[in-house]
Image (cartoon, rainbow, N blue to C red):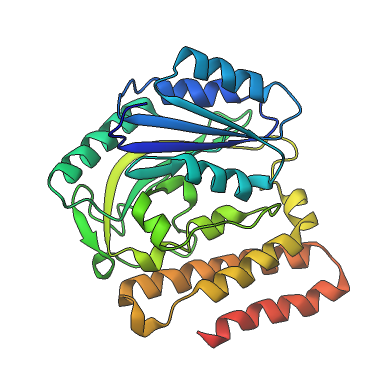
Length: 300
């Protein structure tokens, strides 16, 4: 493994043998010596582990594979963070993939910034919704709120649209920021990606937006955690995530105004999403919980 790793890709993987090759092939296509891939096989019962080991044997200079008993998405990301050595960290879910040309573009920017000792705390890129069995692709961009190609502060970030926020798919964090924020995700909990994209923010002051379609987010497969029916059945998990995010929200006097404004925006979106699924559950007790969920925002 290269001693000077610019970017670590963490790939949490559980029973994704049908999709894993596409993901890993996109990562090796960037053909960069300062990139590492840390794949965490989270107790898979299919061929996920075998596929991962095959890539590691073929590309030992690039791949690390960790096999562990099942700890959930958060536990797999935690293990990946513990074994990563890059200056920057990007989480790529094993059923998603990256655009190799965009990876090269981002790497060039990161190398340049690291050489000049002005590396941003977080890098923002576009991501693309790839819906199963549909040709239409929806690109989520941030050029309406950030200037591309230069470091900016949170107070230079414009107001986000109502349905616009920085998902994990759009974020590349400086590794030191994740350490300072004491990032450690809950085990055996769904939707921890909301926490991952929220908790480190108070530890960031500079952002770099690169207007490129870096990440391809694959949706629509049966049983996926973001499928409506699945989210309704896991509503208690969403509520737990909201509570964690609420506790992580900083005092407005301790962070830049632009950052606080964005964090409340993000928290508000999560509360609305959760309230929607509480209603869709059609359970009487969940209507009361919905009111409690809405009251979360009243304290900010």
